Amino acid sequence: DTAVSQTPKYLVTQMGNDKSIKCEQNLGHDTMYWYKQDSKKFLKIMFSYNNKELIINETVPNRFSPKSPDKAHLNLHINSLELGDSAVYFCASSSDRDEGMNTEAFFGQGTRLTVV
Amino acid sequence: AQSVTQLDSHVSVSEGTPVLLRCNYSSSYSPSLFWYVQHPNKGLQLLLKYTSAATLVKGINGFEAEFKKSETSFHLTKPSAHMSDAAEYFCVVSDRRGKLIFGQGTELSVKP
Image 1 (cartoon, rainbow over the protein chains, first blue to last red):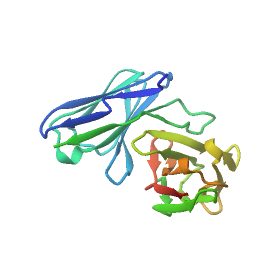
Image 2: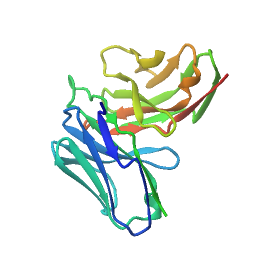
Image 3: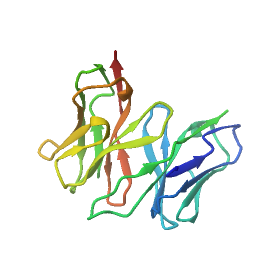
Image 4: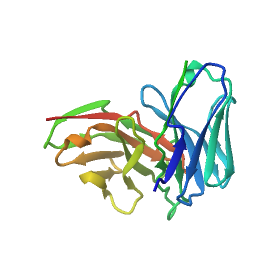
């Protein structure tokens, strides 16, 4: 009974291609995120959506475009892929704050993107 | 601005000995702090979280962490390491928008 699921798990593609990664959560959460983990395992947020609205948009090339058709889905589309885009991309979701404190995020298994 | 610093990039312990993974945070307001674990080629799993209810927080798999405001620390401990604890551990602080800010990670190795 997967809480946050993303597909595909592995993605190998050539430079210049366009690809998408899909994410779905069945936790009833209002907020979804995309994080990028680089080769040194450093994790950094890319985007955050709350109820289909963009909340956080970090300094990410505009080749990356998130799309949230409903609050259970947040897909990531990447145009004109570059070698430097190779990384593991994690989708996550969280509920609204609890008593003024932030609740934890639940993560998907990650998508390992390799651009050749 | 919120930030976390994990003081060790790699920690190695023997099975059955205590584990200590160190984390210092910086926050302009009362922080939400978390420890996540990532096993090889896996996603991130929450170990525990601090949300101001109690300074000593117990998590899964025997891990716990103590929030010390005077030291701005949130170190992760476990009394006795198990081989299955070998993984990458991340100390995390959350900002007011729910954005998670990750530390650099600490790789824990457990020797038999």
